[in-house]
Image (cartoon, rainbow, N blue to C red):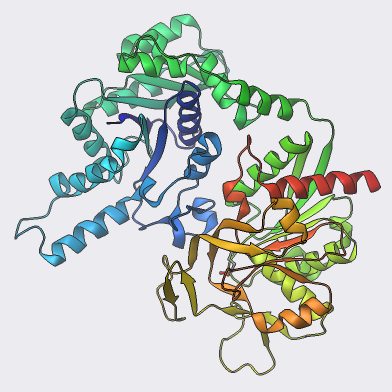
Length: 547
Ligand code: GLN
């Protein structure tokens, strides 16, 4: 039976709970334990799949097809443990399950209430897979005191109370603001946040305090006394240059030791941290740098392309270069020539996205990359735009477009090079879709296999012709244009195993030009960079030597 670590936050949001959880997971693994990380989000959306990236940052997709919070991306990047659909839940999902049961009559006429029905459903979620792992780390989204979060806090309180002593601990993240006028770190917000937590029956075992300055010993003692935690369980968390320093930094200040002490695990196995030392060394001591332009539409919000930013960093770790990624708004390239903006970059990446806005600019950027022979990586929408670009400018199909932006029926002047998928095969089932379907959870989601053409660039990069990658799309490259496009040099080098869905296109006669229908960034890790990102960054390094 797993030991549970519940991770909560107080004072303000965005304290880095996800990162602290992920780093702690990595540290427990370094001591030889197995871990699984979970996220419980208080919002009412059933999942973040229907939320705009501006609202919630990137949607992270699991192999089993769930659209989840981006913190699951951190968990995977730090632990290498593939997240599952059952590692992410929201109030919306919990309530919809409860209401479905109520409609079915499962509650046998009872009055349905937050306690016990909603809390029972949350506890059942926590329990899934408990026998499979040594530690289950469960992060509660939001901050203590949020109305929406209350059922989750109540559920974890009950859960811990119902287990044998020592099986669950609580770790709480807070902020120690620095008041420069008096040159002091202030502990009061932390005290209040812990008070709030204790008023709902949860006493933290470990306090992680975000701070810009080292915490003086006197303040550590004060926090310990007023918050009722042991002084060595007051863990300072200072800002880091790279998130990948987090496991080593947290280890140095004793986080993993404090957690194991709270469980009463003595003696604790010693950690092996060499992998993290190597990753951090490559990040801190690069042999050069490359500039990559990421041309997309959600460029104002860093979190919107979180996994892409991280995967580029991992590619840099592989080539021991610093990747300087710059986010450029593709809408600009609808009005202006992209050349002056894009000259000087060693690689161009067009990421995924939804809707028409900015897509003509992406097409112009893809054209620039193709014609100027700059390494190009197109991901999902970025692949689709590259195909439209090639259709228009190489194959002479001037009206090539996507059904995502043009009306599906009846526009005679429009050639749907990218069409709305109506059916595809998943295992031994055929999935059918109609454009009137609900938007939530109806895309082609999760891991699907693809077969790579022998002798193609991608087969060489992957070192195999059979791959599995994660998908999240509703539209697809139409097969009937394959011959025309291949005749012009755009090779369809990866296909679904049944040969119906194009998965990868590449231009063999180009230094590096690859478009993929899937999201390779979701599977990249600092200690195991995704082969496409490693190869793309290496191509950018080679390009930088030419200029
Ligand atoms: N909007 C496109 C589609 O649904 C691309 C999706 C994406 O980039 N993730 O197919």
